[in-house]
Image 1: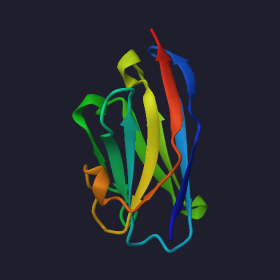
Image 2: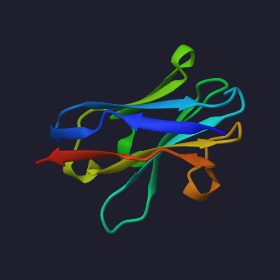
Image 3: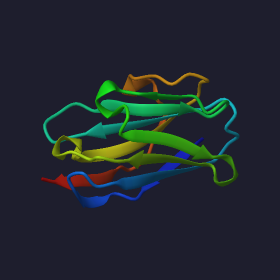
Image 4: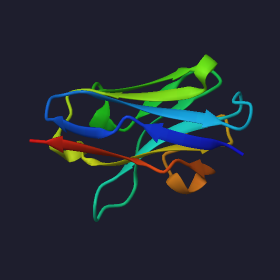
Length: 124
């Protein structure tokens, strides 16, 4: 059992930055992949990026490459999503998810555990 808990959402102006945190607890993390997803009103949940806990490899969707950075802190069992150069279209509820696998996946259905989500609103 893994329980991700997100924090750090809020309101920011376009061009600004925000950092989301995802604290995960409940089991060992060597065979775990973490994903960040977002869902805007009326849209499907989409993959933002992910990280392999085993070696820290990161993956991003094209729309956030160069603007978003995912990292992890092993001692705190926490994954971060650093968001910069934010745009109005980044506005969404952001979710952290854990997958019992070595591999990051872009499909939300294959993730086993989900956080409650945190709202990010970018004003233009």
